[in-house]
Image (cartoon, rainbow, N blue to C red; front, side, top):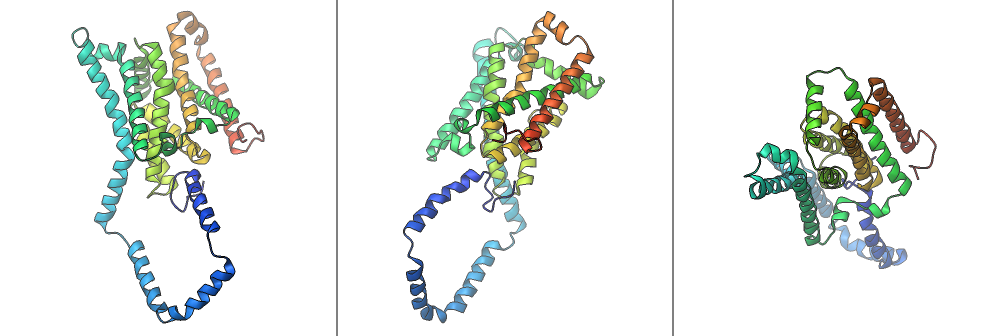
Length: 345
């Protein structure tokens, strides 16, 4: 996608100038009259023309002149703070809800570690919902809406394309999970396995599902592919803005293996949001990616199902290869390499 002249994230934002252009066109002077008026004023302007040109050049030089090192540092620091401020809120509010929930209701009955294992998802989901409410209130104060500011329009999605993005996310996560399962055990994969198991141990299924399938994907797409990416695009080229956003998104996931594949996931989500002018498709992709965790939780909780579906590494290899083939096929449809008007429409 080519970089916009106005450095905005989405083509949709350029549409705001169309009405203004139409209004100007409606009240503009006809070309003949305008030309006559210009000829009439030409003689009066001739004497001052050189001076005006010089003034114009000087003004242009002031605007486009090189900034000092201090000005550049301030500009980039200011931009970075504006870009990450929604993320800071996203990190702070759920943590605050968790702390309050523990101190008020569980401090005398269980340790903090037990609380995080057995009751944390309710407070985490509550905190994320509060963050979304705050975003909505702030947008309303600015005379806008959260949907417009984040370019989140579920009502504009094409159903088949939306399903395709969900399946792509699910298949991609399945392929990654199969690969990590089949890799020889070493320090990094052991840490990944331990971190993954700790996500499910003793967790409430309802609130785990709510967090993974709704609140987290929606909030993270609004924060990263909505506010953050758009802010970075004000001063940076598109590619740099996408890479920086993807790096921050990856680092947020903590575990090294999660960081590695989260970077590529973030990059795909950002490119998709740029191309579609709508982060809703990215939300569906993100939900599909997270849905594999819920499926895995359901299977591992049932010993018979686990023994049947995860009986051997050959089965896992088949799952991984099938999921990889589906992911590649859907990606080729979307990019036009396969002529099938399902996702391209």
